[in-house]
Amino acid sequence: MTDTDRADGPQNEDAGYALELLTALTTDPDRAAVHWRGEWITAGRLARSVADSVQTLRKLGVGPGTMVAVLVAPNSPEMLSVRYATHLLGGAVTFIRGANPGSTVPVLSREAQLRILFDSAAAVLWTDLENAPRARELADRASGRFQLAEPADGGLTTPNTAAPARPSAEEILADLGELPDREPGSLAQLSFSSGSTGQPKGVCVSTRVADFTVRGTVPLVSEPGPRLLVATPLSFVVGPVADSVLTLGGAVVLHEEFDATQVVRAIQEHGITRTFMATPHLYQAMDVVKEEKTDIGTLRALIYTGVAAAPAKLAEAAEVFGPVLLQAYGSAEAGRITILLPGDHDDARLRTTVGRPFPEVRLKICDQESGAELPVGQTGEVWVRSPALMDGYLRDPALTNRSLRGGWYLTGDIGFLDEEGYLSLVDRVADVVKIDGVKIYPAVLEREIATLSGVANVAVYGVRDLDNLEHLHAAVVRRSGSQLTADAIRKLVTEKISPAHAPEEVHFLDELPLGVSGKPDKNRLRRLHPAG
Image (cartoon, rainbow, N blue to C red; front, side, top):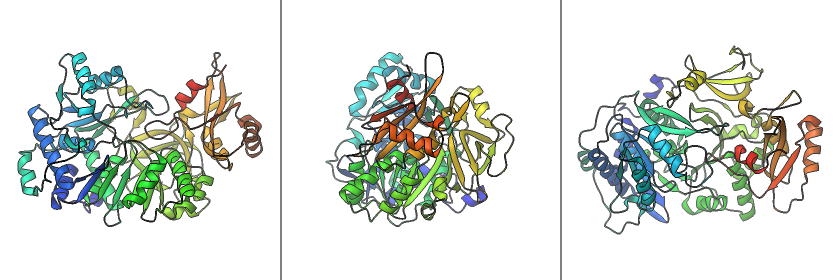
């Protein structure tokens, strides 16, 4: 999508997505906008909260260039309202509860949270009532390096017993006061992505990219009265989808975590038209729909991402969910990259791909050593050029220079393009396992093992022993009642690929540990089952 193409969206480019969204909320203040912990929050109450947050933050000195850290309940509606308020004031946000450094723990340690606060130079820490004790501890240990913002009345996270507010757009705009000029190149959000290394990397996203992402998502929400179910972290890619739905007059249902049974039931209960989940979540939800025979007829778009899906699983999912599946491939550093459309899921050949690039995205496949562009069909590293690229990694110019080259982002993914522009992913550069000189791509094995009827989920990974030699392990979740054995898995891999690819160890688990993005946490799996 070019700058000219973007003119087809909201015309007030200087206003920014947050002001456009706020105006949409006040257009129909009585409509149900956000569902949280059993209560509907009206558009007027959400808009009022944004305006109140602007006033609170302004008193604390928040303005252009100020970093606001947010410590609230997972997927709390305040993750939306505080972000909107901060962006209206020209500041930036980072979320520190548990969704930053790729950790699977519910709440980051105090040390990890302090590190984010210090590294980001946060001037304000925004908290809610249930997280206020931890926030005060952090403030005490930080010796005045930031100020606390605590809602006196509990904010949006407490039930509303007062008469519903019905503010007009004029009243809300007046309460905002004079807003600063927006600087497209200023920092808007600092997200932490651990990728395959397990080491957190601060991804710096500009105001220009934040606006572009929301405005580029609005046209993709095509159904009238959209109702979005969010069960993955709002601090990541689903956040702009929620922004787009609210801008279009729709409603957002927030779950604090992904639970396949609750997600499937909520689709029916709330008439959900679209939802977003990681690929392993898709497999779980598919099994629930089959078991409970839930009516999911309102669903128009089920977007899944994180890891490339197994073609056999996709064929099954297409039968269960119907023509609503969209596989998205992207990253915190590059935004959206490719998409596999619902009709593509009916083609067995295309189910092995992650789709074609979005209109604004350019892709090329490059040699990992020389960086030279490779012809169609050859495998190499995926490079991306897009208006949604990050500015770089926080305080890490060396990593930034390695990852951004001449306007291209080096994804760290290995793949190839076909003649029609469809991208197939082979694996992550960092996940490749080398055994006896043979390169083994775990993702290829995962897709093969997933074809077994008794497999609900699988992750394949390398484990190094004390001599630094790699061993191939597989973690498998069996479907209920399955008697699948490790020998059966090794036999399949041996016959379909080669004996060298058969996992040395197969661990059967009740469930795979997942990171906050929904991807299998292979670092944790390595710790659970180290090599001897």
